[in-house]
Image 1 (spheres, rainbow, N blue to C red):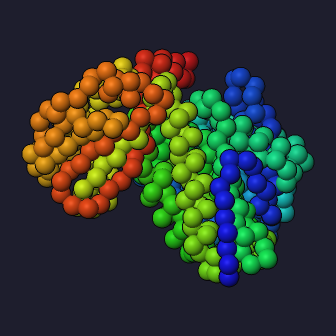
Image 2 (image 1 turned 135 degrees about the horizontal axis):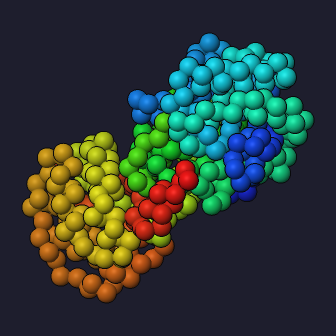
Image 3 (image 1 turned 60 degrees about the vertical axis):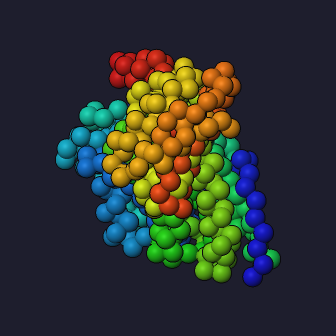
Length: 403
């Protein structure tokens, strides 16, 4: 089967999905805070969740539903403004009630309704407001670009803009489409971030095939980004496949995997660029590691160093802070083999200072996106890790978040 693909930031419309959004009154602002996707019969699913041991109620309910339905999903319901986390048994019951009521409204099994929430932790979900809005939400659903746009806006919290990426590829005489929608701007950290990511495709696939593709895509994208080192309680990446294109995934594995990777890379980059208070995005290259995980371990340590991040906020080429973070990463590096580059300049060679232009390095770090390269001198594996600076605006946003 011949295939050909392209990535686009424009919205695409995978067959088998309709979208809507509404105002349930969860957000004090009165902005849209409830979103729905209805999926065609037979839609399969795979998901990845936060590694935080404190897990929100909708994750528990959604994970159980995927198990009970054996990876089948007919509807996705998302609320923003309230995480429904640390809410005890009432939180579980609230999530279950939303799924039950929506299932009855759409005439689909409760186990095939997948819930998500994002927002403030520890506040009871106003479940009656959500349930009261379901009929309106259902009536509005449409397989249109506007529907996708409305959904993307309704799931936002501290995001300043919606995050969308789409891809298409030809397979035989058919076109396969993939649409990604995400939210996330803070508490961003590998092992998924405080993000909700929804991926919709009309390829035909078994749940196990989707899990394999999703794991690979997440490892190279959402697990290689960090804004602040905090792992949230509600992180979810959900991949739904309607099968409406008639193209089996096993016959289009390579182009689908490439499309999925491209969409996830775009969404991950959009999340980082929209980070709370972010002024500078840093593409951190860790090279010459003995394994990919070793490279990620070094990258995470550097990316989470407050001293490093505040230096980046000031575009200060203080490479000593980077070297110190590498040294405490837990990887058995030999400092005499480590080299560091800022932009196109080597600033540290074999663990000691290397002559460089501070002005050029400062200018490189002053750009909206800058490149920093760390060579460990240990092996041949590498990783590209997206991260950010840490600014006073980040502190202001999170100091005022719940008040």
